[in-house]
Length: 167
Image (cartoon, rainbow, N blue to C red; front, side, top):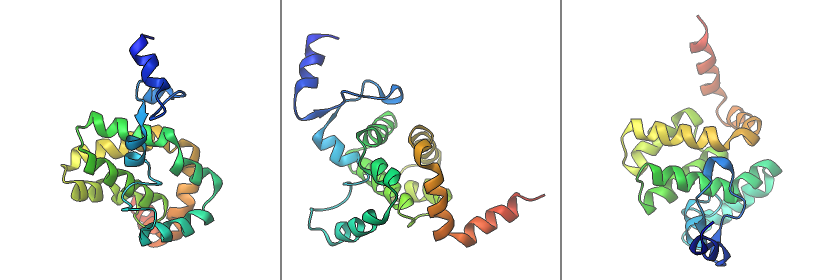
């Protein structure tokens, strides 16, 4: 590793010592972590009433989901995917917010691409690409929790999808 990269990683404003293979090369500043972390994204302050509601929900979530929402790796994946798709800072935190809303059961996962497209003002194809990449690279450890949350919050949509899937 060159000296400038080593020096960068020693800076306390950077995260990234244990990057996973899928996001290797992406070190995050603290600012970038707060921007792309589903745990922090989109709240105006620590006293934001929406944040207080979220924190009460957060306490009830399974440990694996709490770990996902606060993980540096999750923020790296969201940040890296957003950067690869030329999303701006506002769009990055909005993306992280939407993933938090899926995990919290506020948005049905199949609706995420269209909601992302509308909220961050990108075309559907790009939204699908962003969503699929973030899900494929980060949802593995929590997929059963996500399914359970989605089933409990959206039983009618799940039932409809099951009906449509039958020949």
